[in-house]
Amino acid sequence: MLKKYALVNLGCPKNLVDGEGMQQKLAEAGYVEAEDFGHADAIIVNTCGFIDKAKEESIKALLELAALKRPGQVLIAAGCLSERYAHDLGRDIPELNGILGTQRWVEIAELIEHAASGESPRWTGKSSAATSVRRTATAPSAYLKIADGCSVGCAFCAIPKIKGPHRSKPGDEVIAEARQLADQGVKEIVLVAQNTTAYGHDWGQRDALAQLLDRLVEEVPDIPWIRLMYTFPDHITPRLLETMARHDRIVKYIDLPLQHAHPGMLRAMRRPEMDPREIIALLREAIPGVAVRSAFIVGYPGEGEEEFGALLSFLGEAELDRVGVFTYSQEEGTLAAALPNQVPGRLARQRYRRAMELQQGISLKENRALIGREVEVLVESKAEVPAPQANGKKRHTSRGRKDAQSQSVYVGRSYRDAPEVDGVVFVHGEARVGEIAGVRITEATEYDVVGEVVG
Image 1 (tube, rainbow, N blue to C red):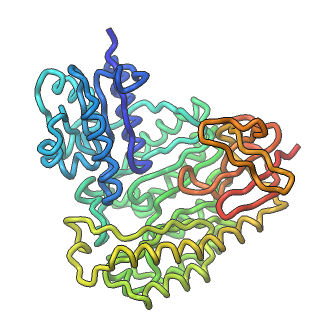
Image 2: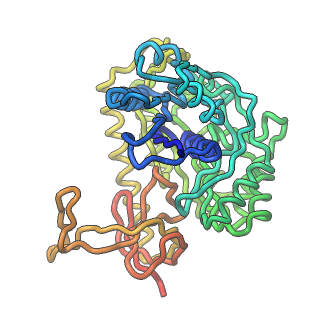
């Protein structure tokens, strides 16, 4: 009789890739995915432990499933929270049958068997098992993790304690995964890591990422879009920029988490003390038409109005295409947690709102500039949305109920939009899910745009 499992994936795309890997390992061991938690023999929560909000979400999920667990079921905590707080989880949630760390996800089937036999395995730290698995695609776009861990040591970040030092995945393994995804009809691969631009640095290679991109373009020709995320600014090389500009299939998009724009804040964060204006100018000169996304932290210890004002000034001048703003999270065990002048949470949230309001206006301006232009859109789904009323406003409906006056539209993304974190394109006309369509933009909002299929 086949064993059944249920998996809850929380956290970032890197965690999602590990979750997909666990599913593949379970399938190889004879497990099938259950239709719901009640029918599962094993329930796995792939947790996130990066910031307080993510920890709370993971703990809430574990507690809810622990309360629903029936006799004979096995409840497993995996992922970042498990790696960082294995002892605490085992003590505070006695219903847990097993704990699996971030570097040992390939051993999920073996851990379940040990847990089911009455043991309480806590497997964290390094693993000697090979991490290469066969990839299975479930959407037109797929994440491909090219490295794990981080060796940078930002003052606010606990990732090196959770994931260990940076470890690059061999190029042949990356190419093999990309080919598997291409064979399943994937149209976009999104390269992810804690720091993608450090790819190959642990081998003593400065331009390994550029070389990997060249190989992907040449050896996996059936993937039309290759997207690069999580690029650390001082690891961007001229060779990388030249490679991105040269290949049409590498989308002209770069995710550059700058974290702040004030030199004193960057120094306190242990981030590269580079002028962000110079970095953005360099990117735009090297890659014409590039869409730039960045992320910033507000409320960092010692941030006053002068420092925050410098960030607002930079956002206003740079007019970045996409911006994420986060309030500082005081993470235990990090250098920043012990810094003086911690910013009150209420003030940090006020600064978050001010920064986002500024960026909304910039984003609206950038999106309106697309009206009348034709862009390529990767169509990912079909949805029902409220039809416009006579006054041009959209009709709102109760959740879960289809409005009689709703209309079908396709939903996709342009090269300017990364999965999950950026906006979408609502597409009218005949299109096919999983294909790239030419779309002429007709309307724009702060985050999303609307268009019609061309031809």
